[in-house]
Amino acid sequence: MSALFLGNHPAIDFLNTAYAPDGQVTETIGDGTAFMDWMIGAGLLQESMATTLRRKFGRGTLDAVASEARRMREWAREWLSRWRAEPHANYRKEIEILNEILARIAMYPKVTQTREGLRIVDQDRLESVNTLLALIARAVATLVSEEQPSLVKSCAGASCTLWFLDRTKGHRRIFCSATGCGNRAKVAAFRERQRT
Image (cartoon, rainbow, N blue to C red; front, side, top):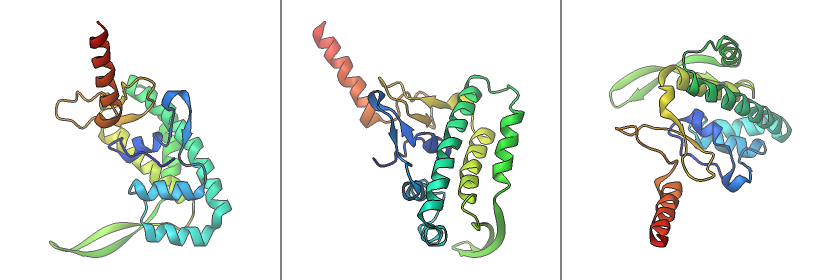
């Protein structure tokens, strides 16, 4: 099954790489190939770099990093669940772990030309396959440092386990997708009204 990108944030989309519609767990990063495809889809990795990494590290190494990513996902899910409930609690241990993973990122300055002129930007140096996990850790770090915990929500759909960042103006979004869970809820409500 393909990955879902409904979370409005790469860190949330990472949590949504395992979901359980109707209680049946769906794993979307089961191997290294699926993990690299997810990284590209999430905008964390360019296709050209993914091709280079696939050639450089091979399937076995990428499968191993996908396994580590699944463990990291469950750690992040548990932490972010607590962070949503208790935003001002002490998360020293979690921050320490996150910073250890972030330390894997090496960057170098790169000059690029845009419509506005020349700019210098930081370019990630992906020398190790473990750097992929650091790119995800950066997304998690961005989420906890720049977003409000109250806007990270779980879908209100029956049996839906997906999360999303509510970026709507009134912050009243309750479903992961208006066309999916939102539509199913409307149909169920209509049927209930018809019965009564």
